[in-house]
Amino acid sequence: MSYYRSNNAAAVLIKNSTVPSKVKHVGVNALNTILSSSKTMIEINKLEFFFPKAIQTELSSADIDVLFKCYQDSVEERDKLLNKMATLVIDVDFYKGNNKKCLFYTGLPTWTLLNNLFELVKEFLPHHFNCKLSRFQMLTLTLMKLRLNASFTDLGYRFRIDETTASRYFHRCIFILYKLFKNSKFVHWPVERENLLLNIPSYVRSTFKESISIIVDCFEIFAERPLVLRAAAQGFSHYKHHITLKNLIGISVTGVILFVSIGYGGRASDKEVVIKSGFLEKIQERYVILADKGFLVEEELKAREATLKQPSFVKKGQQLHPTEVEQSREFARVRIHVERVICVLREKFNICVDTAQISAISKQNDLYDRDLYDKIIFVCSSLVNICPSIVPNYFEM
Image (cartoon, rainbow, N blue to C red; front, side, top):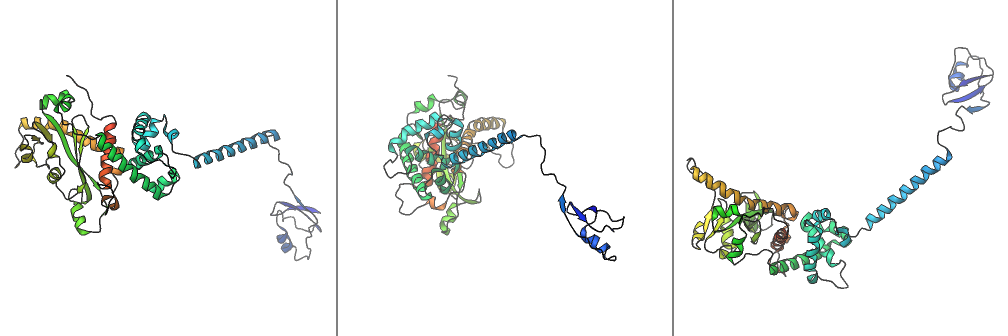
């Protein structure tokens, strides 16, 4: 008898060893083919595997038990974390003491500011047995919508409510915040001249003397295209090449928003927005209005004994006089603050950047006195005012 290695790594015991010497390490079928001439068939008596029954490793059974115990602990910890994420509740404890989380989700830089805002508005928020959210959750849901502009489906999943319920709470809370901020004068034009003169920085005082400086500009928000052709024509902006909403904003030289107009169609000119928004009614004598070249309201301001300051522009290819260059530089140094405030308004609240839905712009039989986006812009401007100003408020009195 002889042993031969087969293809499946097993030992084959054969009989009648009349196999030629040149045949080595071949399978049973190959041997039967070779030995067919001598009519000698191979019979397998015993099949044995050469693999050892036990594998020797460097780990003992105690080490394996420890590793298995660590694996079980990791699985249990993972399940606890998943369960905690599934049952996470966005409430006071979610924001308390975490300034970064407050800034990311609400746009307010500190937890103290968020808590003070809640203490101011909590008495006006609805609270009864049928409410699925607490007062603090209603406020944070509204701020998260303004800040992130997340869909109501997303907010519904986060607060474990239906998307229609989230939408209803947002609209109600926006209306309450608008009325409250309007009465609290968060965006307010002081009637007393002394209040505006007292806060004028030294570098502005040296340029404009005792005149009160107001910086104005318009910013536009993209909107969906309406189905009515007349509305689409009124909303198309040749500057943005899109359907837009145009709002007029007026700030002081310290970066405080004093005036925000309602939304107009993008087709309206800057002069038309200034006249229709009621901005001229707040202008008094010796006011200095800093604006861009599109605000052609010099005659209207002269009628109120106010002055319009605009940057100088080259006319008919003539070079500017050095005095005009220096004055334009001084005006641009102050006027740039309105651009910075608009950038802060857009960066803090993404709802002022994304495309406005046509259903939120104009509603028939609206229960409120203004459109939704007018209230949204006013509320966002009020929240920017309660945050630290971007203009350095150093004075040299």
